[in-house]
Image (tube, rainbow, N blue to C red):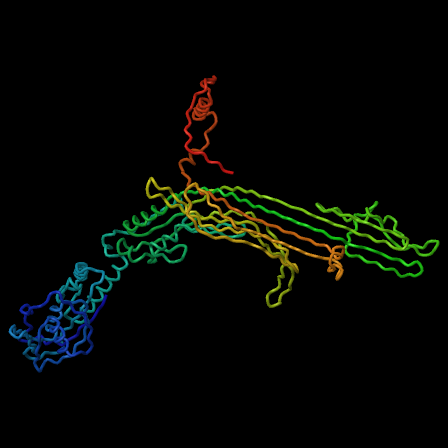
Length: 612
């Protein structure tokens, strides 16, 4: 509401008041919006009349200062109001299209005879409601003029009365803003509890494989539609509705009760009915989507190893010194029997001798290794022994892991499939600044396969079209690495995509490869680098592995009626159970418990599909 007091000294005992402005050819479509502060009244008249296409002339006595605010007021009403409030007269000459403005003649008056005026713009309240309130309070309707086009109320008379009426209009406007334009017709406020059937009133949180998954509820949508704040529940008495909703239905107060999964609405019957209609449109069962996922993980590994290792020992009989060399042979460490052979220096009849009791090719074979072929050759003497160990390995591994999980989820709700391997590593529990008692703790690292799918149903627009399912996919495959210094490396591959898949069709995600190749050479320095001869002094190892993970994803829109018919159990022994059993017997060639001649059925084969 805009309130502007327009104060002017008007002498009441005057002989002549302003003439009727009806003889001036006014343009009824013109309105004026203007704010003046201590402005010369002649400039105001000149602006108004020039806008109407007329000229103006002033008497020397017309020189008042005026302050006012006009907003979308018809130009004729603005001119008349200025003339009346400032005790002026005017005349119009149609030949020259000139308006002459003069001061009214008459004697002066006392200060008590002066009048005041004010312009009040009605924003939300109507003029009829203002008149009713003024009559109820006994303020009287004298000095009131109302322009319906600009919704402007002119109040003239005593300054105290003007202030009272202006305050009244301001209060009525404030109340109507909270109630809406139809607030007087909304009726008394009521309270209604609306329980939800299919949706949650607030977000629900689920824990899955150490991660938090939040499923949204209806509260967020209500906050947006009704202008609620971000709190979980709006206390009663708060003005929490959107301007558009308030303008039509009034301002309801909304609160939610997670305990009973209900929405509590307080307001007029119309507002409650409008909120209930919104909730009924939102609280509907979502369609379900069955997602069948075929996960194939294939790994191929090839390893080769070929090399020669040497060991030798020399003992001098006449001296206590001995020499030995080892290039990496692997003796049997199982102990006992032939595998426990040893070599040592002993005192014999002819001095110190090298004893190789149990030291033979069999005892020097390394512990058995799967897929490895090892040969050991030993040459013994009285004072020396030489061993040559030949090791060869060639292996090829193939592995395939097949998983076929199947799940059902709601439309636009994320489904998650995980096949994980959790690893715990030691971590330092001291603070980053080095303070505290310190210590070692365990931290969990999740590795493995994770698949997140969010389906969205795209309904068919006609019977000829096929329904589609939009899939928001995220696939991640991670595996622990070798690491070093007590740390664990995690190797991962991740794919994120959005696709449109026809109902019951299959979508394939591939390309999650894990390819590694390790080649190593070890042996005697320098000797292993000699051409040809160096092959006797080195060992070569080669290992290569290749893995790939492929996803075959098939979404199917679930018909709730077929699910209910298929899943509802029929009590054994009931009439329905007996009828179903008889129907199955009839289909299998039995009628009333007796074999019947098989019925011939004609089958029309239109298409044959074979999946490998």
